[in-house]
Image 1 (tube, one colour):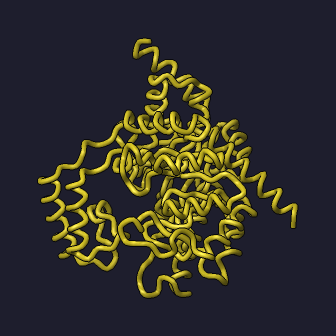
Image 2 (cartoon, rainbow, N blue to C red):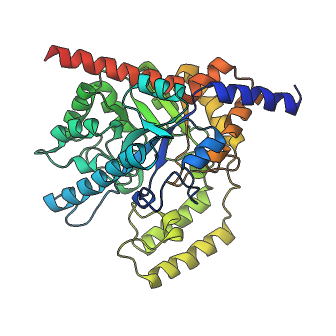
Image 3 (cartoon, helix red, strand yellow):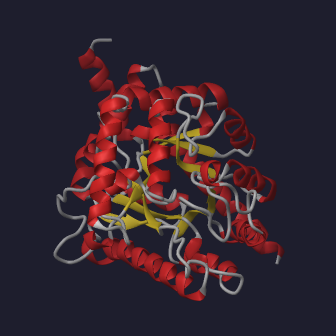
Amino acid sequence: MSEEQYVAKAKGIHQRVITLDTHNDIDVNNFGFSRNYSQELENQVNLPKMIKGGLDASFFIVYTNQATDAEAFTAVGYKRAYDTAINSFEAIHRMTTVLAPNLIEFARTADDVVKIHAKGKKVALIGVENAYPLGDEKTAVKRVKEFYDRGARYMSLAHQGHSQLSDSNTGEVIGWKWNGLSPLGKQVIVEMNRVGIMVDISHPSKESMMQSLQITKAPIIASHSAVRALADASRNLDDEQLLALKANNGVVQIVAFNTYLKTDSADRRAAFAALRTEFKLGETVSLVGVRRTTPAGMSEELREQIFKRLDEIDAKYPAPTRATVKDLVNHIDYAVKKIGIDHVGISSDFDGGGGIDGWNDASETFNVTLELVRRGYTEEQIAKLWSGNLLRVMADVEKVAKQLQAKK
């Protein structure tokens, strides 16, 4: 086909399928009356950009940074994390009930997604990134149901750094705390099955994932990961993990995040590791984040010193060229060939570091469909990749929850 024919075919498919992105971070400051997602903000995902790019549905993320200070795993630290999470839950619901209810509606079930899309509205869902706000033995299990009632439909038990529930993938560098899940984390997985929250393994360690698979009665997801065989990053899934996910009937949502699609050279990674050691930076301090803003507790003088060293590393060991939509679909191709079309989906991690050339914000979503069409994917396959597989897992989790509740 000519390029014009590819574009015409892709436009038709893009309009007909439900396009669902499983991971978009939020800033609660963008959910107020004077500044909110109904406006064309400078961030990567908002309603004008979703409309322009034909992005139909989004999991907006209740994210909590993993604290490591002296109060992190005390009542004070847990309350601080819980309050942060509740603010995010409330912000997302404010968008769908007060700020823009004519444009976007909240979905609690897989069927809701289909019904809301049929009305011509955008669809909002909630994922929880880092279950740290669940707290300790006194609160964690009961808060799973609370978070479900607030709309959470998937949750990861850890992020950057180990939580009270699970090791993080960052343990490959900083060492392990639980060697997988903690005893409390195992209880939380059981309760997530019971209430109907999908288990997300994108940030927890590989061993945590494997232990989760031994416990879960329902399929699980990786909400925003890529393929480790193509990009050796600890958050990506290796072939053993991909095959385990297939056996579980789960789905990996391949993420449009530059450094998870194309990784740094060994020399560049070693230089970054040396920088972290020199400046005593924990794994929870993002070097990308340091470029954006000053982390809490860091002086401007120290930040300037780190900037200087980062520039020196860039000059000596240049970063790889930025990933493109082609690189994203290379990862999709690999996963599809390894575990089948029914176990692969798409995510962006927009407003959380995601974005690649060709899909740098929600307004460019069509470009992903166009590349899939160029690669020979059919409309049925593209529908599965964009939402069908994830919604199937979501429906399966709902079904398992009903069965478990009926046994009580």
